[in-house]
Image (cartoon, rainbow, N blue to C red; front, side, top):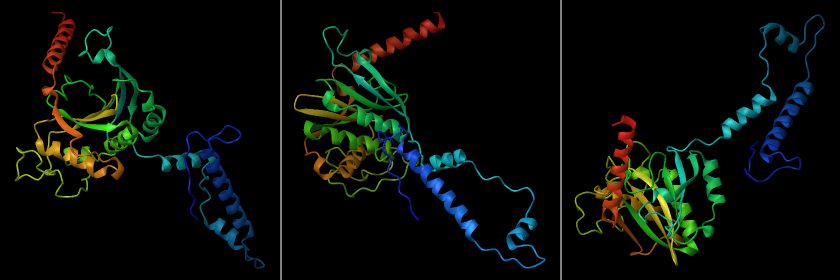
Length: 314
């Protein structure tokens, strides 16, 4: 007999207990009752002067019988079996306010960033994030960032300074669905799998890619999905604009062109057909090509040097 559990975070029973717990206890209690009925209904063979079969079995068995597990132990076993595995990486979620007159500098991104959720390493907090942060409430020119733990969503971070990002300009009517799907690709390692070979399963993609060798300087002898080492996915961002949203996928190495192309290819291959962007609505750009890059990197280096001096007392 197969039992199907439907998990719903918000549904509770009349007594305020989660339905999942009630259903599991009901199944366990019914299983116990059925077992007891089966054992009581089974006939035993009794012969004069000889013990019954059940008595004989008990006598021949070891006197130290194993105590059956308690209801609590059985419930814990069920919960463990149903618990999803953790993500390969731990992520965190940041809200970045748009620059205002009161902001010290438009390039001072870190002062406008607030961490809203940390240690996203399982499905539960990830789904809570998706369900409780509606993009419609995001103010104009505000941004949100979903990044790996230890990587700041700024250009001057050591893991970002040599990298870049794919930018997809997405109509607001479908940006929420687009954002959700690329987040799924990130935590599911579909994107990371094409830039971090040897760590994750390979990703099945149509080959040759319709966008392969689109750049005139691309090396035609190197397939775009050839494994490359040294690259990594740093995080994803969404920036609110007037008629569309900008969705970015940051990677660590902008100089590894096959890896850069593979990121684009896997996104275009995995997106739902109705969400696929039109050609010309997405592009890749190195962080160092942005205006103000040198300024923020220099400021970040100066700040790090100042902290080092404070720690050493020099």
